[in-house]
Structures are given as structure tokens and as C-alpha cells.
Image 1 (cartoon, helix red, strand yellow):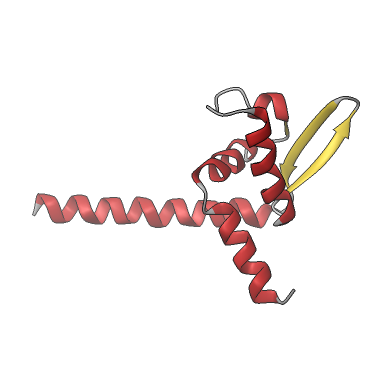
Image 2 (cartoon, one colour):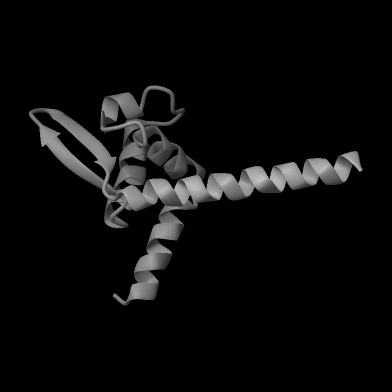
Length: 102
């Protein structure tokens, strides 16, 4: 797999609203599957599929602790990437608001 394909894999993994929500929850720290599944409206198997995609894209790491499976963000740069996107969106919203008011 070449570098460009690896980059695309990361962006594709983050491009789904459910997976982005999962990663944003993990910004606060490591969580187990049961904690990730608390306020998400789909099945555990569906959550597992999304976690696998994020893990395969090297966004998340998985650690087993007895019967508990914990997930965390693999690289701090992912958090920075999400922060940058949030700043871009916030700026766009401010610009649109200014245009509406003028």
C-alpha cells in the first residue's frame, strides 16, 4: 500500500459521522466498548464494525483487559486533525453568519 492510499484510508475512516463521533468521544481518553455504546443508537455489532474500520486505518488501538476491550486514539495527530477541521467549520459558520447579517 502506498502513502497516498494510507492517507485516503484515514480520511475515509473519519468521513463517517458515527466514526467521527466515536473518535471525538475517545479524545477525552480510553474507553471500553460498553462506554462507547452508551449513547449511540445502533447495535454492538454495528459499533464493532466501525471500530474495526478505525483500527484498520491506524486511528485507534485496542487493548484487552480481561473481558474488557478498551480503545484509544493511536496518534495525537488525529486529535490535531479533528481540531483543525473543527476550526475550519467554525470559521465557515462565522463567515456565513456575517454574510447573512450584511
